[in-house]
Image (cartoon, rainbow, N blue to C red; front, side, top):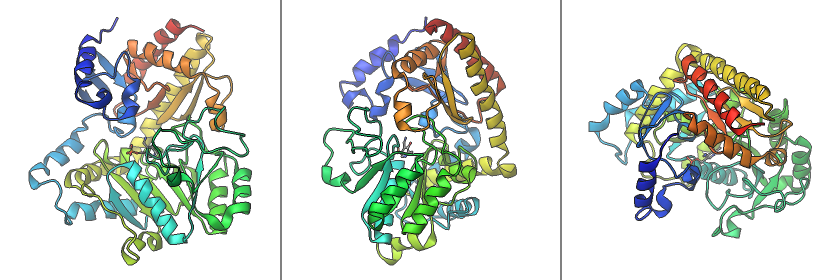
Length: 434
Ligand code: PMP
């Protein structure tokens, strides 16, 4: 039995001073309390009670090179005494901007921000300013940050969400201003006909279609073949912008993210998380004529910490590693992730557990459902309670996943770690039973 006594004590103490004991509501899911960690190294996290965790949460995605990747840490350490943020320009911004525009065909220009949430806001403002239109198409089950303008229909319960053909926008938090999200048009993802119908009726009002090009937050679901191309075409035909939120998928589904993997060219994209391997950085990348309006038309984007020296240094080092030998690290990660996905499926069969393991090898989810979900409504039907039970059983075996049982892979998850994970999953499945 693993013990969490010290975490429990620290959580109680912290809650006296820090609201809810956490700095992000996403962290409430820890068991028995949000755990306290002392350090992370490679694929492992070490908590204050002496428990070691093979970590598949990876900070919710950023730690693509594992925790504390030595080359990134060294590159950042070299800059610490140079200062942090100048409210002025520096060479590392040039180096990273050049690198990103070289690596990503859709990135004619980039602009740096600090979090995914705010970068999405910049992309939406750019889209509205550029097109002179107001409406944004947003998909059920997709998450684009926690602001009033987009924290809508991210995980709606089926009885609130209205009919699948005409979803009702569902605000996901108390305190949101209805005026902030009334310009959203909510529809189902992976359904090109539904989007085509929306464009037929509202086409002249739509500034942009915003999406996770592979759905991750509402259940790991791949775009159907041709779907993203269809969306791109519809957007082009109706003069709307196609915006890919690659906060999770960027530099995870490959060097060119989901857009490279599935072969589309969005007008604007948002990158964050993996791009700086754990340091705070978000990037809006896209068409020159759109991004230029930040200067030529004064479309406002600010941020005190944008382009800070350490985040730039981290991202340069991370992208050097990720892009070496044409992105060779991805092939290795894909191979190990595939083995883990297959291994989990085999174990589920062995234990008679109804489980679908779906996604791509570098980010996938174990879902307790009979059939593979193809959209949010289908994903919402999976057994979330059982996922929670399995995530806890895995934790007891030293394998850390989020309460939805998503697995993020890093370059540090080597073959021995995968073997250890599968052995732990075998015992966890025996524990939860069929
Ligand atoms: N978009 C997507 C697809 C995300 O997954 C997230 C965060 N999980 C965000 C935006 C928001 O990013 P951040 O947490 O950095 O604000």
